[in-house]
Amino acid sequence: MSSFYVLDSDSVLIRPTTVADIPEIVKLQEESFADLAKIGNIWHPDELKSHLDIFPGGQLVAELDKKIVGSATSLIVQLNPIYADHTWEGITGNGMLTTHFPAGDTLYGADQHILELDIGE
Image (tube, rainbow, N blue to C red):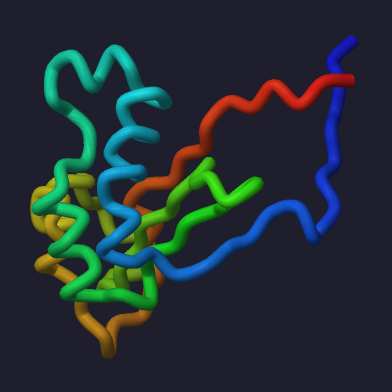
């Protein structure tokens, strides 16, 4: 039987990402995706800065006890027709979000991750 934990709404803060968050997000990526980090397949600071420059409103972090424990990256794209076939690389501009189209019709979740938390029983 698995356990399910609910944190009250005052415990976790979801807020816009800032440039100052970039080192902590990179560290979170390294912890969350250790195998991918070994081969360099995680967000790099220049990519995260590009995300903030291109679409700051689509970049969020989750904080627990003033520590970043999650982040989400999104952009707006035009999917025509709806659910058109695409690749992650193509739709995200190889992760730089250069394909962001403010007048598009779809909010695309490019990445989201959380740190595994040991919060007890």
